[in-house]
Length: 103
Image (cartoon, rainbow, N blue to C red; front, side):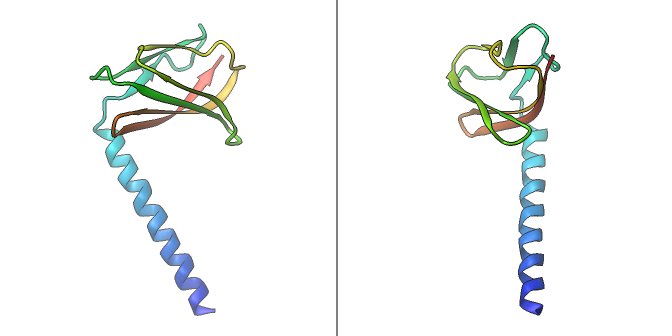
C-alpha cells in the first residue's frame, strides 16, 4: 500500500513541476495571437521572428479540429464552429498554448 502512495506522490510532483516550468516559459515569451474572442473568422499571430509556425487547435474534449503550418501572421479559422478551444502555436523552440474563443 505504501508503494502505491509513493508512486502517486512522485507522479504528482513531476506533473506539478512540469506545470510550473511551462508557466515560467510562457511568462517570458512573445508568441501569441489576437483577437480573442474571435468574431471575424481570422486570428493574427504575434511573434518577434518570421519563422514557420505550427498551429494546432483542439476542442475541449481534446479532438484536433485544425492542424496547419504557416509563415503568415494571419490565419483563417472560418471552418471552425463557435465554441471554446485550445490553441497551440509552435515556432522554433517556443510554444504558446492558450484558450481560444470563437463567436
